[in-house]
Length: 306
Image (tube, rainbow, N blue to C red; front, side):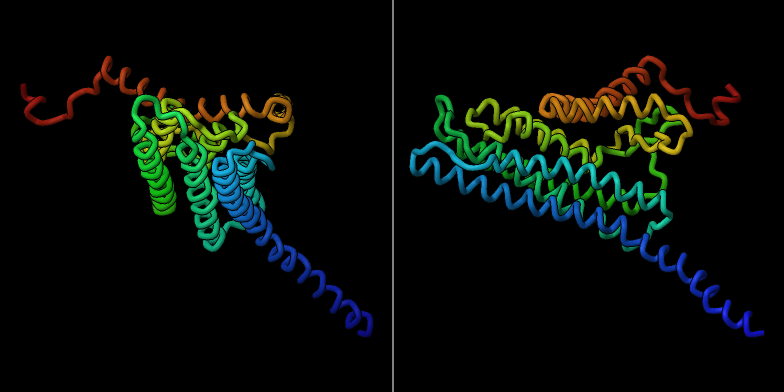
């Protein structure tokens, strides 16, 4: 009797330990989300510092000194894209998904992938134009148009998140292979990744020529439209990281990481633009295929009797 009494507390402690560990696992995805918010806040600060530094340099006619703030903002957004992919995957792998986590992730995405890249897109692409060609008023016009495009990016990204939160098993307007998983519209982290990759490719040096800023305006507007579109974008969710022998996957990931570390500017630039253009390509491919092979007319009793 005495021995059984002694064993009872240890058994209860053993039962409570997995429960405590289970509760502690719920905070792990939220930590990655918090890191996401921190990187977004850091990116916003870097955009502000970069704008002030360039304004002071222009006012004093001095060479710009100090860290490349715009490039730092782009790098912060790029790392946030990585953390955003990890928090959801970790939550699914550990079975710790929750309504709180989903709402926190959405709010974090608005800050990091909405506000931060919108500010970066405007400050880097439209606030430092000095060569306006034959029309001096073009600088003011491009600055205002850039502000509108940046706001369009922000509201399109927020709308994309709201649509994603309320839809259940959405299907793209141009469906692809049934064995693959797709996003309906370009995800907001990918849209922010395009902005960050382009800024990083140019080392954070602001655009100063009007025709380059005009191209950048078209890119920002295009990304905004792709986020609210119903076109399909590959989600990479069918990649199985739990396979027993993922040799090829490990090799490909190793090559990708090494390429990004050694040649981050061209590699990230190509990856971001390729993913953006992939949605346009598959949409056009589906339209041309549908034009060549139109669907059969709907079945009606009149067509059956005729």
